[in-house]
Length: 348
DNA sequence: TCTGGGGTCCTAGGACCC
DNA sequence: TCTGGGGTCCTAGGACCC
Image (cartoon, rainbow, N blue to C red; front, top):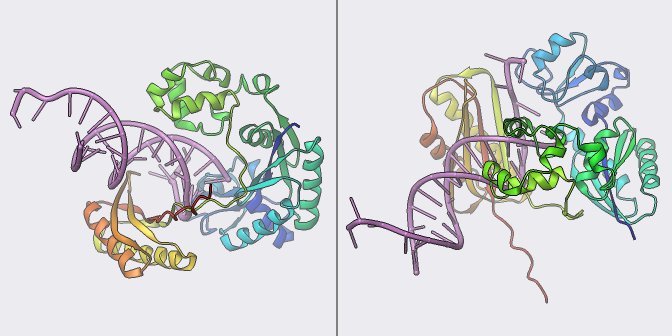
């Protein structure tokens, strides 16, 4: 039997959730991000399709968005609301036949052996809209990579299929950054090697790519360019590797004591997150971003896995003291690497 | 484009050990 | 001590994704 992977990607998810609870915003340019104040530092998390027509997208600085569309509605991020909406939507998807892997707030993979994956896809779209008011796009592929790219071609609210049979024809002439895992930096490095399209990347010898991108990433890039992906759809939740918080100041801070106080507060916040989630840290990493966007990190290993506020805070302060250099600071962060839980004993 | 906040994974160099 | 070669762990930084 054939085996298909569907990628379900909610359309303009965060903006859609906001419009659902504020119906008067429907049809208007809506921009969600930061504290919702476009005169303060922050970037766009999601813009509604109406706002995207003004050149506003994810990652656009809020101040730029305001300039491009002064009449847009700016809203702050409300994580709990999106988590709740996401959970409700995933319940609908989980009713489909097959294995569901939740891959984020607004996306999931479904592995199915159904003969007609398009039917599953359109049934999902209908159920999701009926029961949650959310639209989604569905990509169908022979593997996760193909399905993921296919869903981006299906937006908004469409269904699209990309298989090994059509890969070369659909992807061959596209720029390398159309691929998952190729962003601006890698696209530029590839361009410097004379590689600008997916088709060209697919023909580059592994050794050439390994020399530039490393032994794992290099050959992986070529596999991605060929549409190859052997990863499986897994329903189990992945164990978290780290937990952290960071904060960008509206005004840069040049005073050491004030920066250190912010680090201590973040450390206590992270510690209480760990407590709430039953997690333990093994290492505490402090991040400082200076005004010229120069970022430095420093970690401190803990003697034993811990979640106590005093221990996390003390470690963060030690890391800060070892890291800090006088300068104008725009961001600080505290991140904890987590104890890896022992896998259950194998029974052979 | 004066550039968020939450994460994940990979790389490369040095320490350390045999 | 004019000093190899390999494996593994730790750490800071980088790239990417949503």
